[in-house]
Image (cartoon, rainbow, N blue to C red):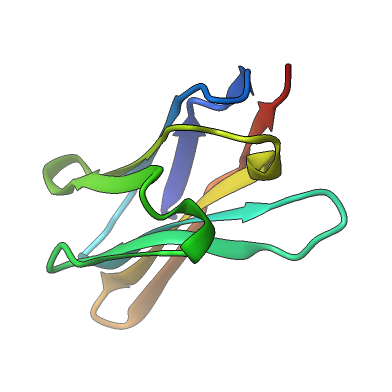
Length: 120
């Protein structure tokens, strides 16, 4: 059973920064994608940023230039550096990893979510 454990959320003032981390444990054969999603109150969960096995990244337009996704492949960890935060970034942030747990079992794991609140 693969588990993802997130950390780094909290309360921050507008203009501030936070860094989220997500570490995977368990049997993993290959991770193809690592991503961060967020869900604001009353809204659906949306993709924020994603990085693939080759290191290519994509971001939702609203966070481009402010957020950076990175990874530590050796430790199956993904990060989200968030700068210039504004109240619209307030949400529960979830990490996701996709790939293979084994030859016969796909990997599609989610973290437990970490709350990011941007408020003065």
